[in-house]
Image (cartoon, rainbow, N blue to C red; front, side, top):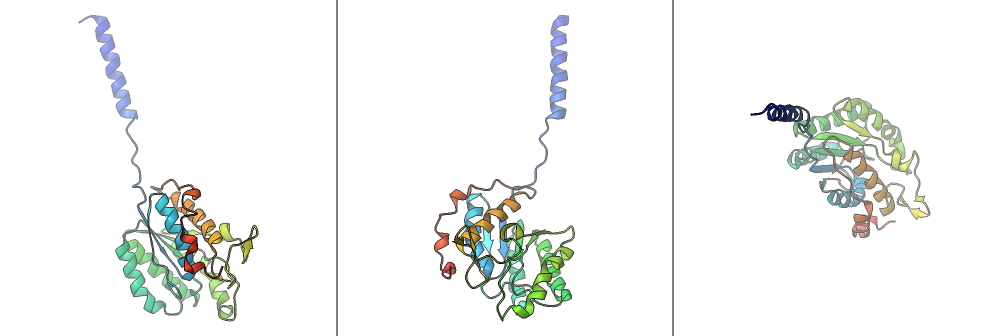
Length: 240
């Protein structure tokens, strides 16, 4: 074999060695496959566009939000909790999102206990917990006595979350005060509590974008692919 041929082979060997040592594919987080959404009747309405948005983005979605409940602290939480904890365990979701509810009343310690139970069950299920703050409400006589408790919930959730869970501030969507209309259209229900389709869609776009940023995330679908797919006609929005 000639010296020139040996030189070419040697160079090729060096090139292959360099390539094999520098082009190994980095390990990637498994792609997000399923999200579980929990909360009260506000979340029930938000779950409609959320389901459409996650589906369009190739991510599985399940809602366990409940009318008149869905809370892990406050009235009837002791009765709600066995069902909620079982649903979280059985869902096998990558991410569990709990929107703080308008029923999360109680002392700071009661709130802390409820949120810690939620974190513990979610962690045991192999899921990651994300708290989302509730939209601001216009309190009536029913809610007014509990507003101090509700105003405390984001801080309690952050204290419980530590470095084990995430707390997302939905003021990025709603601002700090209740606003019924936005851009001349109904954003929130006239009852002072719930969302209308426009507000629910804005929330869905924001939340899907936030979850997509998590490890092993996904590319959110263009809102045009899910915003007008029929969910806005649901009877839940009858008051809008």
